[in-house]
Length: 201
Length: 149
Image (cartoon, rainbow over all chains, first blue to last red; front, top):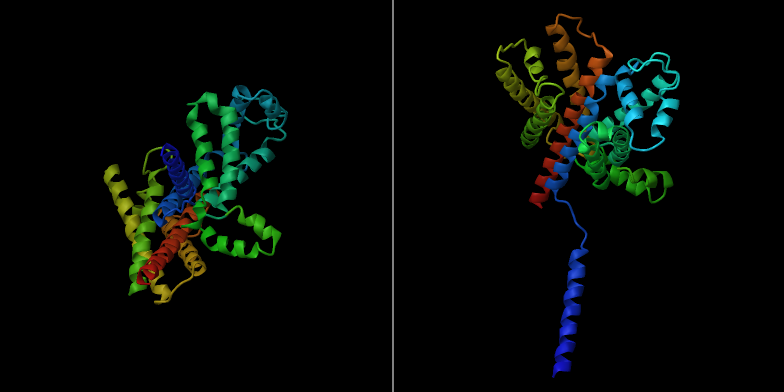
């Protein structure tokens, strides 16, 4: 009697376990409202990056200079300050202006262009995941250099926000990725470049 | 009629997005909202009322552009490509009419005068308005088709 009872218990536990596994592993589908909400968040995060283009405008990118100086002094990774001093700040003679800096303008132009790409990508939902990956890298760099000069989570939140947009294909609503994604996926069956490009929408 | 109604709703929502973007500006919140009043030569002395008025005017203008968007579709079922491209074109018209021509005329400058900073601060946002307008209109069309099936 006890043997048969324990066998049926085991069977019941096994069935319940199997049911639970099948329900907990069910793929999650975002509702139309959720993905549209995420698309709005994407637009506002893109706008956040967009606004930061204006205090370091070309051709001299002067607004960026004090931040590079701060990063070189307060970085949390040993050696990062040394790298900045021998790249961005090579030849610089002043702490307040980029006078004499030989590589500052071309490197600052790269940073500014990268931020412009993030802006376009996130605001227009164009290769959104690529933009989000780029935003993650830029925000990580800010975290490494400036985390301890402000509230510790300021740049940490920027990193997490960008990572959330890497995870969710937020450009497929209210963005160009809605048109791009199915085409790239179809073309990806035959072309490797299209397959790789489809990872970024 | 259906495309007009859809365009109006999409335009109002896209206008709301544009107004919200103009609200979260660097410095004082809503600093850029009175610019919409400036396009029509309206000046309100109270800064708070001026910002509220600018906020609602942007939504109304969005609705007008939405109606134009709807009228251009001529009761057809539109693809996402067509919706986004039509939206982009309307965003460009918005930029040309408001951010360039009316802004310059009301500031007593040459109609097409433009510097890099002003171009960068207005052009992408106005195009974004168009893209959002087209995308919302497409979503509304898809929702209606799904509910009809």
